[in-house]
Image (cartoon, rainbow, N blue to C red; front, side, top):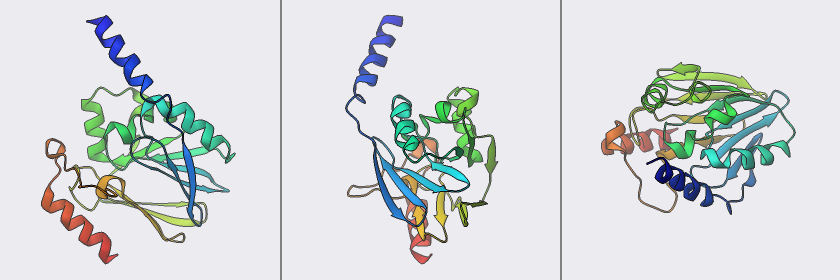
Length: 196
């Protein structure tokens, strides 16, 4: 069994060997890193780096290298939900920064036996405000949709909204019913975002 598990881990690692991390300026202080899995959001400024989601664990060092080019200290990691393509690198980045997420994200990560550094140390129920890099950052749980712990992050000054998996570009959305997601909640959340 150990050999089989090791082979699966090696194969999984190999699927990320050719992934490149591509930075894109979005607006204001906000950048995006594309790789594999959910896109990473970054707020860059004099206060340091605020990171949204961490993609898969095997990509952590590549992501770190891309962020080093920006030459700022990582201060916060915000998770939009608990799936591994959004929290896989938490263990790596959680050693450098404070991890923040909805309380259901922490609960689901605890259920998956995450290491201590991967767990959010600050959780919230409905909303959290950060004042970082000269702008107000609103972290909002607008209700179960993709999962029961989804958050969207709104950078007011930059006028950028990071939606995690509350938005799938170019494909049909996935609703994780086993993790408390609901189709009606997802539709309601999209309506709420459009109204913003």
